[in-house]
Image (cartoon, rainbow, N blue to C red):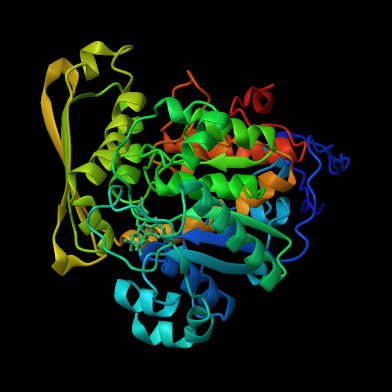
Length: 459
Ligand SMILES: NC(=O)c1ccc[n+]([C@@H]2O[C@H](COP(=O)([O-])OP(=O)(O)OC[C@H]3O[C@@H](n4cnc5c(N)ncnc54)[C@H](O)[C@@H]3O)[C@@H](O)[C@H]2O)c1
């Protein structure tokens, strides 16, 4: 492992030469040999922006802005050591050249056609990556109208029970592997948001779940069938939407049993990203919050799906949970007990993917004096989400090669509703999440964890 030079600091009276202390990795990481298959249920705005972006970056047509795996550095050791390699030089990640894409959708459009329809990237850019995008033709989806009410696709597996459909997905995976010769795969759900549903008896054990698949239990959602097929095929699974999906004992047990890493849920992009930047700051200064009103206008297909109250309920749940967990009203009742937190998403077609998110935050300070903060974020949903997909794919593959299994809480950084062990509240503060992520990488490679104590500099 190359760790970059260590520079001595005269300022701190440290020796000219540091002994090069070889760190002892805590985990053995298998090398990223061969190609990595990226399997995506949902060839829509986010996934095509991700795939087209990777192809564009490979050709030098753009930069991977927003991606930690491609751009971020990681500080190692003491501040005086000046060791800050890039993350991708510090841990063995798959390279962009090694990614091979495949997926499923309820529409037959190739990734090129889907990207054109999504209208996120300019046509002139898409033309330059047309060939690889046209080659990605979605496989027939497992779909159920009751779970996504606003879409009516025809490219769907119709034969047999839910169990037969799971087997058909596993067969798709097997033939994708054979066709492309990939050595490993990761699956990431970029499909539409399914309606809100809670775990029931069928989700509690693997036996009950498999029985439910065979009996076509209505409580088993299509995304759960994909997750099951991935795990049964030994493939790590990430969920970019707020669906329940693999956040159920049956599938989490399966992941642990089979030593497969998983993570979710719901990419943390526009408004919630802002929330997890601002709220920890207000709390850090012990400023109070009376209310937080968030509203969005959005005109893409995701917006259309979220216009259905059932799908919106899934989204609302993940968006609302963030503030409570960051502000901890049970610890600070005077500051945060009575927050009026409202989240709205309005489907407004003229805006397409260029979402506008407004926040009005009513805060109070010294002696209770009120103040207001207004945020107007003119963002691009899929432009914010694409680098997260890339990082999640590369980090989940790393976790798999490092022998890590079950929920990967260190990837909370990427999610609105991070999955955690039962009974553990999720960490939403983005800066704590980032520290957790980087400390996990340091831990993997046997480097000291960074606590930011820093007393040793003043001894
Ligand atoms: N863009 C963001 O910033 C962001 C942030 C957080 C979460 N998300 C979530 O990511 C997901 C994708 O977003 P998007 O903007 O690409 O939406 P999109 O509507 O453009 O794409 C979703 C695709 O999934 C397909 N689909 C639906 N059900 C399917 C199934 N059962 N099997 C296979 N394909 C299926 C749809 O046909 C569609 O093409 C959504 O659930 C969205 O809520 C997006």
